[in-house]
Amino acid sequence: MTVEIKVPVLGESLKQATVMRWLRQSGDYVKAGETVLELETDKVTLDVPAPAAGALSHDLPEGTDVEVGQVIAFVDDQAAAPAVEENRQQDSQDVVQDVTDHGPAASAEGEQPVVTGGAVTHPAPAVAEPVASLPEDRGTGERRVPMSRLRQTIARNLKAAQNSAAILTTFNEIDMSAVKALRSQYRELFEKKHEGARLGFMSFFARAVVGALKDFPVLNARIEGHEIVYQDHVNLGIAVGTERGLVVPVLRKAETLGFAELERRIADYGKRARKGGLALKELEGGSFTITNGGIFGSLLSTPILNAPQSGVLGMHAIQDRPVAREGQVVIRPMMYVALSYDHRLVDGREAVSFLVRLKELIEDPRRLLLDI
Image 1 (tube, helix red, strand yellow):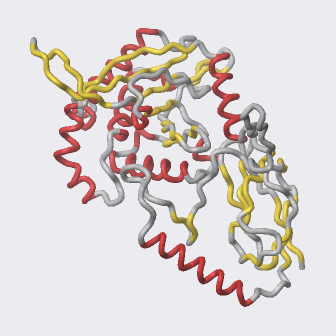
Image 2 (cartoon, rainbow, N blue to C red):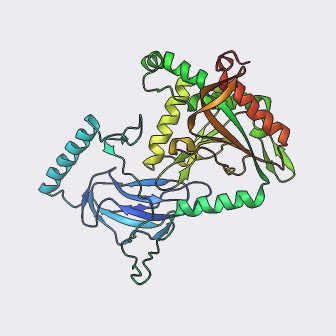
Image 3 (cartoon, helix red, strand yellow):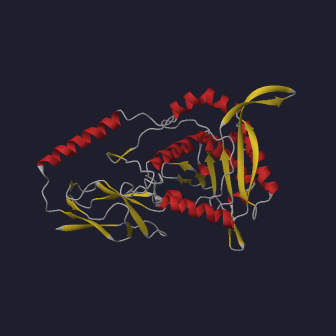
């Protein structure tokens, strides 16, 4: 019996995808549930599993656009598994176990490889394939590479945000001394008590943003037609830069999350985003966004709104700088912060006051605990 493999339901607003990469070739014997194909949508990469064990057959080249419900491959479940296949599967399991036990070196502090469902998640390529099939113009030294669906969506959304919103940016600087001291004093105890959670800077800023939005809820609102839609909860987007482009997973009801849970979810989102393993629902419904260019060394920037949101906070690198304190020049770890906002909805007074409130909460983190 031949079993069809179809393009799965992608999401309410998504009808098309692109065949990004075949993980198993036509003629290979596959196991039921084994991922055979990666599809790229406008937002995420989806793994397509084999519905049954058997011989796989397909003829769609990588880079082909497909639609929801379209048959893209077949599995002959009457085909017998060859003897060499059993050895291949055992070898594969040995490799996965070795990665699980030891793992490759982390690419950033605290970042570990992702292993899910007994198989290593494949990192998504930076561009949609097939790149190798494109001819190179040797006369000019140029290559033409098709934009991935994600890159096209990013370009379209950012331009739409600029065209529709009146974006303005205001700046401030924050003395990070208190937060750094608090982390230094309690980091070991925190991480020992809350297994799997590292005490980073992002959780402090997430909590501070939630606190500041309580005082200035218009920055957590959006415009729809001639109405202002205020949110009862803070659905906080955390921008993550990946090889494929920027994605913004959402921490729903962030006001209900403590430091440990914030750290766990942010770390989990970051890892899965870089591996292309986020679900569509995890990228939708954000009401405010934080982006941290400081991890790449950025000292100052003007972030663009994530439409239809009305505010985005940009964090930057922490840098020791001379500052005046009580008539003395001292060296302090300072961070510039930037708030881009939709001036159609948010007045300058509210935007500046939001950053001042954020500054107060970060420079005296005891306020976060006492909610003052």
